[in-house]
Amino acid sequence: MSRDLSGKTYWLVGASEGLGRALAHQLARAGARLILSARNAARLEDLAAELGGGRVLALDVTDPASVAQAVATVGAFDGVIFCVGLYEPMASGDWDVAAAEAMVDANFIGAMRLLGRVVPAMIARDAGHVVLIGSIAGYRGLPGAIGYGASKAALMHLAENLHADTHRSGVVVQLANPGFIRTRLTNKNDFAMPAIMSAEDAAARVLRLMQSDRFRTDFPHPFAWLFSLGRLLPTAVFYRLIRN
Image (cartoon, rainbow, N blue to C red; front, side, top):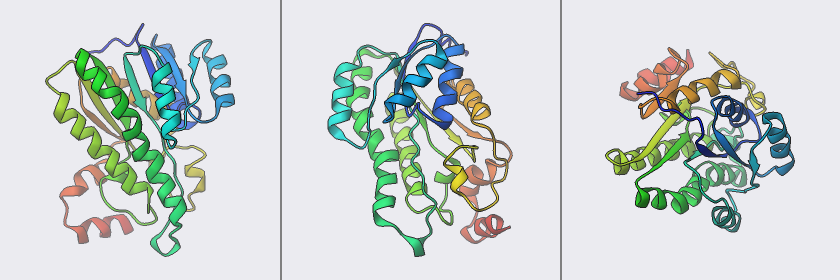
């Protein structure tokens, strides 16, 4: 099945930078109408100008009042894309409690705040499209990923919860799990990042998922297989592979 996105309205949350910004361009070229959300209203206005259209709706997913206000004013839309990705590299010995909590709050609790206010209405009308951006880092515990890995693992589990509840309905739930993407976030890393891809390449893969009837995509292959299939490996074997 090929899903036609032309003429559909998508609420893209996390649109101002990186993958979200690249995905906005891909969706616009596919003919979708966009509601663009993130905290930085100025960057969203710049993006809307680049796209030649798009409604700007500033939103902070870590602020319950901001989420409630946005949901109350957003109006009708066909689908929502949660593309929030707060990241700080952090090992257990350098645990920054505030920074770790902030990642969990934005990447996972933010999704709970937003989707809890929009998914029940989709189910009630038996129509809607929910896309969550996870990470292959959410499949197994990794070094230096305190906060980020756990938040993405929780988001990926939430996607499976939603899919289990809606897969026989008119509501479509999809999950995209990218590997390393060249953005201002990965610029913080001081280690080698195998198979790193551009934001444009990653956005094209998310768009292909959205146009398909698949629930999930992990990319890029074959690098992503180490993580998705790595769940089946004994722990000692998996960490030996990671070290290598």
